[in-house]
Amino acid sequence: MKRTIGFLALLLGTCSLALADNIRVGTLNCYLFFQPEYSGNSVSLKGRPTAENYPIKVQHLAGFVTKVDVVGLEETERNTVSDLAQAAQYGFTFVQGHDTYTGENTGILTQSSLRVQKLGRIGELDRTVSKHTLVRVYTPNHNFLFLVVHLIRPIGAQATKHEADR
Image (cartoon, rainbow, N blue to C red; front, side, top):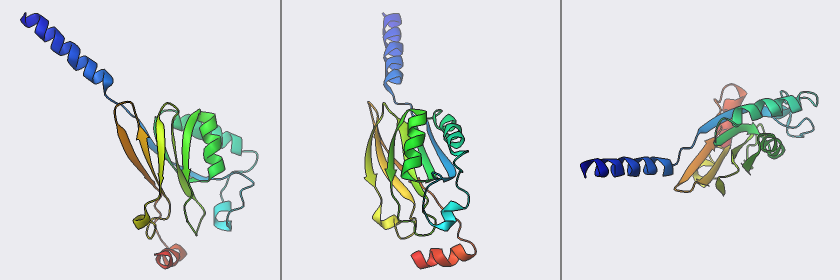
């Protein structure tokens, strides 16, 4: 009888672990990941990919994101997040920031099997963190909030601009 109870306890514990959610989470600064024809302001255009190396960058970044279930992205724009999602075969959520300095924004990619609710932006953060995305990700057993934030270190001319945006 003790052996049967012990076995049932082990089986129940194993089943509980099997039902638990195990989500791999990452973040990736895509470094000025804009399409070559992107017409943002001049700060954004200085390091963006050329028409020749854009497809290479998409595949390179896709190789990183496929190792996780949810990945926050920084320094992106809507079209590049869409291209990256397609290359990695992921779903995506993109929230346009109000970044007036670089035009860089944040997004989030998730495995297509996960349901995502776009919550948008947090009003209180807009005064100090212009680049952020908030989403809720649903798994079979739980839901998680993810806040993707792209922070800058205001130095030089950026310090003055950053203070003016506050």
